[in-house]
Amino acid sequence: MQSDTPPSANPDNHTFDQTEHMENAARRIDNISSHLAAQPCAGNYPKGLLAGEVAIITGSGDVSSVFGSQGIGKSCAMLFAKEGAYVVVTDIDNGTICSRCPLNHENQIRTGKSDAVAADINAAGGKAISVPGDVLDASFPDRLINETIKAFGKINHIVNNAGFTWDGMLHKLTDKQWDVMLAVHNTAPFRIVKAAAPHMISSTSGLHGNIGQANYATAKAGIVGLTKTIAKEWGAFGVRANTVAFGYIETRLTQAKEAGAFIEVEGKKVALGIPQGAAKAAPVNQFADIPLGRTGSPDDAAGGVLMLCTPFANYVTGHTLEVTGGKGI
Image 1 (tube, rainbow, N blue to C red):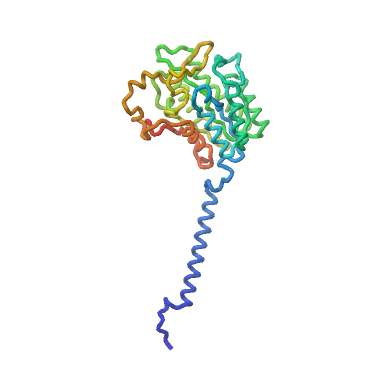
Image 2 (cartoon, one colour):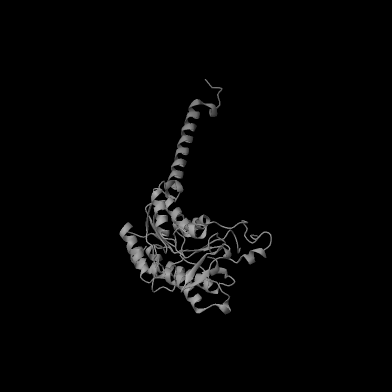
């Protein structure tokens, strides 16, 4: 007897097709799941992208009460801790003055800058220690690394953030201005990285230059070269080295010079910031050359630093990331 039901509508055929479809779907889900499990996906890091990793961040003390704004270093420290890192906060505070250092910060430093940030991190449920000191003190890098190893037993990340500007037109720039910029932006990071080597084997001025900052631009270009050399020499040991070049970030270095922020160098006050006169002469939209149309915040800057330290950047080394809002493109 011949059925009037077409083969495609046969219940048995339908059951077979449905089962095959479900099996195919299951296989696709398995493939997708295995793919996602192999990727550095945020969902795979419930304790944070840097959970259990140790990060040293120089210049990460709390400068808010001194300069009226939070610095990039503090933002990095807080963000890294939020992502599960054990943070070593370090800055010049607690009256720490280096007799061999050309800088005299005594009138500039609020007691306990790095202690305050470490305390905030610990109070929020994170883990941090404070190692105050002057990065220009030749003995400080070894102490910084030793204290870190003593507390956490390892080092995964070093963020050489400490620094400042000491501006002057090239024909008026003194040897001291030149030497201090190279010391804080080149020599200090070199010493810290060198001291950490046994445990690790694991700014746009340097790219585009800046009027009145021949010393600062040279120093920043130098750190780019040092970073690329570290990337080449230590890559075989699984160590990555990158730099971050910041654009107009709202810190004491970009606020109005008239606000009074300064640092003392051998008894001489060096004003920090941008003269207000330049701002008055600017066009109505003073951020016209920044595609995003605004300045960056310390938190914006910290995000760029964090990105290079996460698993998402495992194959990025020797690179300079420009965090500029698009300025200079």
